[in-house]
Amino acid sequence: MKKSNLIFTAFVFMGLVSCKNNATDEAKMDATNLSMYVDSVEKSTPLYTVENWTTLDNGYQERAMKAEKNAATLEAADKEKMEASKAKYATLKANYEARLKEQEASSQTKVATTEAELQAEKDKNKMATAPDYRMALRNRLFGEGKIGADMKFEYVTAANILGVYKNFVNNVAENKSNYSREDWDEIKVLYEALDTRKNVVEKDLSGPDNREIAGLKIRFATIKATHRGGSKGEENKDAKK
Image 1: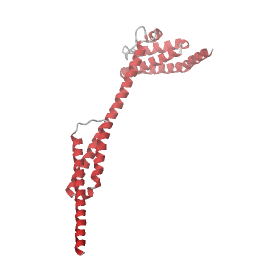
Image 2: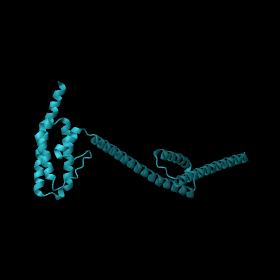
Image 3: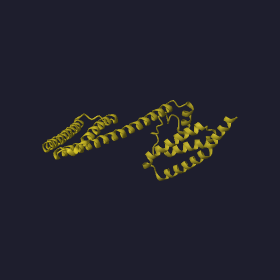
Image 4: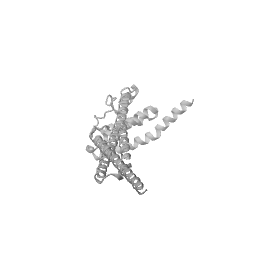
């Protein structure tokens, strides 16, 4: 009886040892697979897309879960190797995600730039096909042929800008009651372009000229505020008739 118990105990012990050895071998294999996978990700040619990164990360997570399952049975050296692989992957992940964010920001910038370029091209085409009445309005406000479809004010300098403002504001004052809503829209665009040109030449502008221009700007603002709304109101009344 005692002999039978000893034999049974021996079989149980051998079974436990065998199970432990099997778990250790499996854990070591899983840890090795994880390490090899991380090395393959590190050596592969980077493809910085969300889809590619999702595939790579899913592959890592699957192997990491298997490696962790029996990690407690690993020897110290194998555990250290597995932890080193996990640390390496964490660095790869951080770099990969940083590049993805950079690409996303760059893509958004390109989209914004493209949209701005498209709008600029539309505006340019719109101005290039401006009706004759717009060209006539520009000629009256700035002089024959001074301002074309490109809306350049390069002829305006510190020496002549006061005269340009005077001619512009005086003409607007004389014809304020005759302008349509579209005329006022065009006048606003032209006035803002002239102001932009003033910012360019202002460093060479004399103090007296600058002060007189400031007065003309106030006069124009008053005219626009009191007449542009009236023009719209009249157009609305006409539309209702």
